[in-house]
Structure formats: C-alpha cells, structure tokens
Image (cartoon, rainbow, N blue to C red; front, side, top):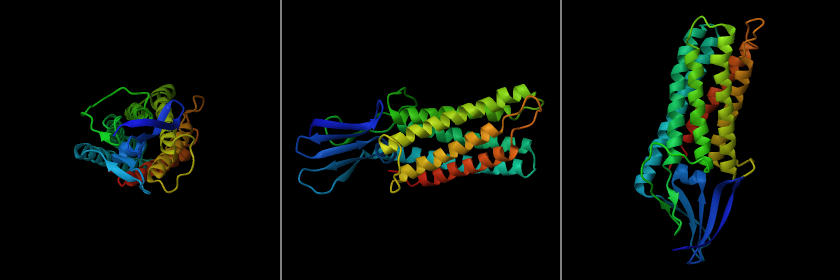
Length: 278
C-alpha cells in the first residue's frame, strides 16, 4: 500500500495527527500520543464502516510497555514520597527530615521523567509507504525538538533535574537568606516552570491543537491531572520565597499544602498512566 495524500493536524509547527489515503482506497490515521503510548495506528479499509487499530511489532510494543510501567511506577512512588515529605514538614516533624524524603522522591521523579523521554525517543514511527508503524533501533538519547512529544518529555525530564538541584541544596545547613533563595528557591521556580510548559505541550498534543475537554480520553485525564499538579507546585514555589528583610517564608502553609496536593496529582496521574499501555 502506498500513500497518495495526507492531512496534518496539530498545534503551531507541531503535527500531532496525520491522516493519509492508501492506494487501495482506505485511510490510515497516526496520532502522536497513541503511537507513543499504545503503539497503535488506526486503519480503515476501503468500503469498511469501522476502523481497526493496527499494532506495532511485538518488540516495539514490549519496549513501550516496559517504559510505560517504569514511568508510571516512578511517578506514583515519587509523588507518594513528596506527599509524605510535605506532611512531615507541615505537621512539625522537621524540615531536615522532610528534605531527605523530598530528595528520595526526587530520584523517582527523575527516573520517571527519563523513562518518559525514552518512550518518546524509541516510539515506533509511521511507515511512510503504508498503514503501519515501523520499528526503530533502541536509543538512549535523541535530539528532536521539532516533535511535540519529544519536546514535552524532554522539558519534563529537564524539570526533574533542576528540581534535583533544589532538593540537594535544601539538605545544606547554615545557608543565608540569599543563598536559600538562589540555591533552593530559584531552581524550584525554574523546575515548576519547565513542568508547566511540558504539561501545556502535552495538552496541545492530546487535543491536537487548542486545549479543550476530552473527557472520554484517558490520555487527556492523565495530562490534565499532571498539569494541575504542576500548577499546585508553582503555587507552592511562589509561597516558599524567603523575604530578605525578615528571613521568613511568604506562606509556609501554602507552600507545604501546595507541594502535598501537587504531588498527589502526580501520583494519581501515575496510576492512570499504568492503564495507558500497549
């Protein structure tokens, strides 16, 4: 089967859905998130009323399934540790103990971010000559900023790395107010910003353009819940700024509860993600 024409949909310079007509009169539909997460492509044969899902090769499917399980599990555990850490800090056990719990949770967040990036790097690509997904050789890294799925997951992974600076610095003792804001608060704010941009791109991807409601789409729910978590993380970061004049945090309760509820969102998103598998 060969491609005769195609219609692209997406956001800005990014293509998130591509429909092309096959020489036998049928059509094939490739969607960025569906190919990456489920290893599926939709094909409608000529004269058939219903479309069928065509799966990628078994090696690609197993690879995607493993990476999805790693990412989902890492976000569930990492989010759970952040919830626990925020509760420890909020209810008086101590910031030092909470900092170590946060740091451990951050390691899981980074693992989940990298597994998500690997899933984008190693997703099966559409076969330009027919209605199928073509296997790709395994890669640990790629540079593809023209792909919305790669850019979204890369920014997510970068955000977890920046959070690592924040979490590592928070373990240090005897920092001045200026050092706290520079080494702890600033990386926190940058990491939250990267999470928000990543989540926005993920919304554009799953909605194929302008963000909207897709209540019957599991992928949309995962992205929406995670983006809510990113917003709550940002609220927490803004409230955690230390005033140079007084040496006090803007609002410690908002900072702690923002972290707790934001992390809970990522844990829920991880649970949902476990079901969005090939």
